[in-house]
Structures are given as structure tokens and as C-alpha cells.
Image 1 (tube, one colour):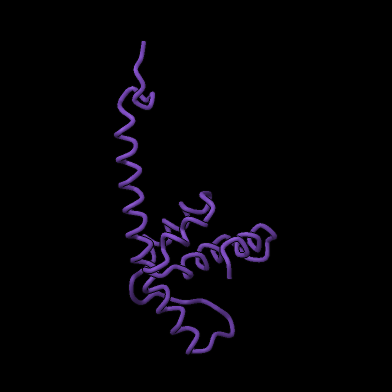
Image 2 (cartoon, rainbow, N blue to C red; image 1 turned 180 degrees about the vertical axis):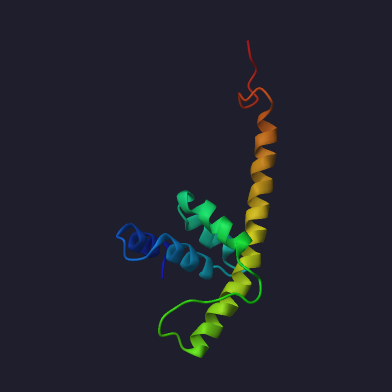
Length: 115
């Protein structure tokens, strides 16, 4: 499902915020993490970040109704790949943001001359 479709379902109240975050996270692979995350509205980034850094890399529980064993294995595998990809993406993004902030300078005026 596309990112904007998932967000629309959340905004209509069809899925919860937790379900949205999980679905967004589950859609990430090491190959597409940057493309997926560029489509995610900024308002959801803190929740995805929290999920990525608190979800276990192994084990854990998948809670879904009417889930076949095959589908559960597929979800577990996708999440197992998504979590490290998301953690790496957030670490790179955080480092880039810190670097950009430092380049602005201590005056907070974007490095523009004063006076």
C-alpha cells in the first residue's frame, strides 16, 4: 500500500497511529529506506524513530488476527530487515542535521554577517 493511502486511512480513523507506524516501518527495506522515508509526512517521523529504536531485532510478538504462519513469518522477516535500515537512516539523518546546524554558526543567523 502506498504511503499516502496509509496516511489517509489513519486520518479517516480506519487504522490507529500504532498501526500506521508499523505499516510504514514494515514497508521499508534496506534498498528503499530513503525513498520511503522521503514520502512519510514529517509529523510521523518521531513515532517511526521511536518504533525503530525500541523494537527488538529478534524475537518480539506480532499481534494480528487471522494471521497464517506463513504471513507471520513474512512480517517478521520484513520487520527484521526494516529495523536496522531505519536505525541507520535515522542515524545518518541525525548526523546530517547536526552538521547543518553547526554550519549555521553560533549566532543563529545562518552565518550572515551582523551589523
